[in-house]
Length: 80
Image (cartoon, rainbow, N blue to C red):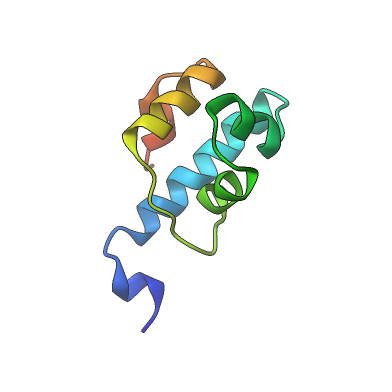
C-alpha cells in the first residue's frame, strides 16, 4: 500500500512541506536555522519538508514557522 492510498491528504502534506522549504530558502535560512528558531530537531524539520514522505505537524509548529519566516500561516498552507 502506498503512502498516497494510506492518507487522502498526502498531496497536501507534500505541498505544505515544499511551501515551507521555499519560504525558508527565500529567507536564506538552513533547515538547522529554522529548526533551532522554533525549537524542534533538524531531523524533524527535514522530515516536514521532505517531498517523498508525509510528516504530521501541529498547528503550533506551523504558527511558529510562519512567525520566524515573518509570513502568515496561509502562505504555508496554500495548495495551488
